[in-house]
Amino acid sequence: MRDGPETADGRTATQTPGPGRRPRSMRLAVGAVFFVTGAAFATWAARVPAVQGRLDLSAGELAVALVGLSGGAFLGLPLVGGLVARYGSRTVLCAGMAAYLGALASLPHVPGLAALTAALALFACGNTAVDVAMNTQGVLVERAYGRPVLGGFHAMFSLGGIAGATAGGLAASAGVGVRAHFTVAALVLLAVAGAAATALAPDPPRPAGPTRRDPLLALPGPGLWVPGLVAFCALMGEGVVNDWGAVYLKEETGASPGAAGLGYAVFSAGMVIGRLTADRLRARLGTVRFTLLSAVVAGAGALVPILAATTAAGFAGYTLLGLGLAAVIPLVFAHAAALRPERTGSSIAAVSAVGYVGFLAGPPVIGALAEATTLRWAMLVLPALMAAMALLAPRLRRP
Image (cartoon, rainbow, N blue to C red):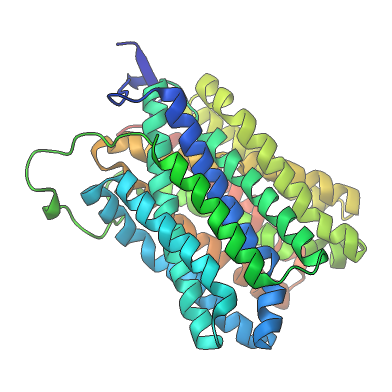
């Protein structure tokens, strides 16, 4: 056997290709799943106003419905990791994808606020199941390839999001009803996912003994808190840019509404470029140095719009932020999987759960600080998060 992918401390692990599966076929299949997942979520995100208008929801009522989205995602993470450990990533991925796309198709048919909240919770739970299982599949493909490829899969998720959002915008512009749009989108994406499912990576043999004794809840254990905290910093930063980036450009740099809206597009473009180039850099630099580089680039991006409050500086900063944050999550997932290769799914779920706390906490923290000071001062949270990530990076080694 030849050398396998890099482990958490920069060494190489043994390659473990699955029997009867070609790595290239597995890579194409997992990439397709990532694309479908991004496209499905973007389909919903692009038509939120249409769903809101159909049910005549106020902004407050829509916020209540969105609690189902975030709550379902967060509460499902520890459970999904245990399911992957028991039943394998392929089984959980197929079941989760069916729930995810089924819920997507149901969203424009719900009769009211309570049903929409429940449907969004199911949509989020399905998305969580797919997310953990497809990242587990990505780690298995990395092991078969013998080099990092997980960043490329996350790039496919971003590209799927761009495709789904573009299709949603075109559908809205053409006056296509949300029911027809979501039904067709769900069927097309289900067909793609079904074809991909035939070539997924086989799960490794489970440890001897009854697998049903595995713990159902996947919580962070020894060694997983450090990658979890790195994920916390990265996802909190991403959540802040998602919710406050455009507001900052408009209020602090004087950007027009159109230019402010482009801020997220610039950030997303940086994410895509970073994910497409991350695998080669990670293979060359190793986990610790790559994390340090990511923190430095993202930290510089966070500081630029604060030090020079202009629209151009905002665009430059958001591009650097996207580049720096792009591959942190795939990196910590790969690190967690290397720490506990026999429990890849539960390790990824545990790290995701810690990271998702940051994603949810970031926007309200910025809002509270902005109320107490100014938005410009509040955004100093971003470089502080990147500094914390840099301090944590040297601890991303095998114990």
